[in-house]
Each structure stands twice: as structure tokens, then as C-alpha cells.
Length: 122
Image (cartoon, rainbow, N blue to C red):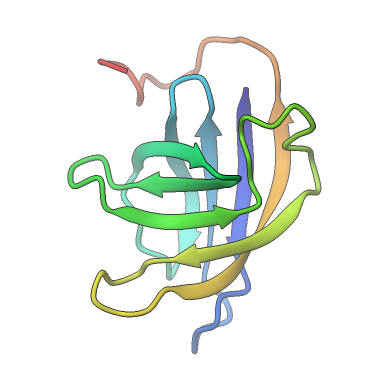
């Protein structure tokens, strides 16, 4: 399953901050598809625990964002239109910035990706 998720409405001075991420539940990885004012690596790893999905930096494994209520293992979801709160850990030594996540698309099809971004060990 692949999920396209939109992050926005962050408590910051710039209201245009956003990111669009593609989550690959099977590979347990994510990629950045679009962004403005939100500095994230091109891809990383993801994990779900206690109903919260966390994305991490691929090199340091530092958690970058926490999607509260986004449970990738739930039998009832995720579903298109689902929303919740995201905590963006912009800087490791500052408090997280609050925002919102929104599921734009859920793709249940098993197709080969056009790009080999996630090629390599899983």
C-alpha cells in the first residue's frame, strides 16, 4: 500500500509551509514529493507504533515527523480524506511544531515504481 499525505497548517511565521510525502507501507520507507519551507531529506524510513506513524532521516534515524492517529497497520485505514495532527521536529533542540496531515490518496495496487529511489536493502 502506498499513501500520499499532505502536511500543512504549521504553527509558524510562514503560512505557506507544506510537504507532500509518499509513504510505502510495505517497504517501510517514505519519499518527499513536493515541499516549500519544510526542509526534509528526499526519503527516509517509517515506523508505526501505538497508532502513530513516525518518519525518520535515513542516515541518522532521527524522527522528523510524527503523524498522530495515522496507524498504517489498522484494518480500517488509512483512508482518503483522513486527517490528524502532525508534530514536525524541525530542530532536535527545539520543541516540535504543530501542523496537520491529510491523506490525499491511498493506492492498494502492487505496481513497480517508476523511480528506483527505494532500491537497495529493505
